Image 1 (cartoon, rainbow, N blue to C red):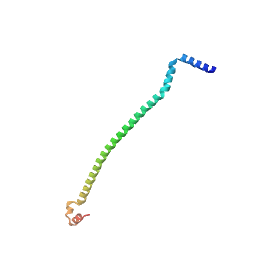
Image 2: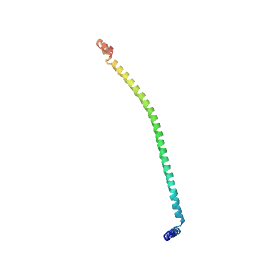
Image 3: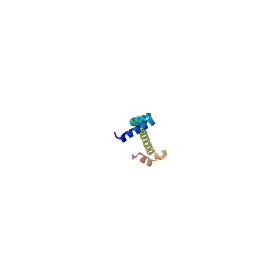
Image 4: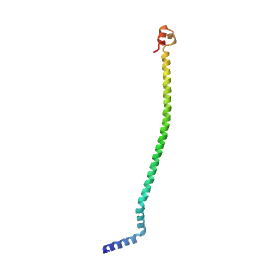
Length: 115
């Protein structure tokens, strides 16, 4: 060993005596275990986010199912309203004239003709 190496080791031993061993041991533990702790923490965050996404997609599936039921019921209502309006149109077409005018022979001929 060179005299410079011996001087560096002596200075390092002096620093350890002044500071103590616990801070250096703590620093070594954090440097070796810190990345593992960080990786575990990041994994936990990712798992929570993934479970939130899974919950969101399952909620969307239930929303689509309920919307499908609503759309089917609205389709039935639209069909029923269309049938009722068609019946009203036919009633109005058949009852264009008042009863007194229908007794007029000229009007009877126009009413009885299919259009």
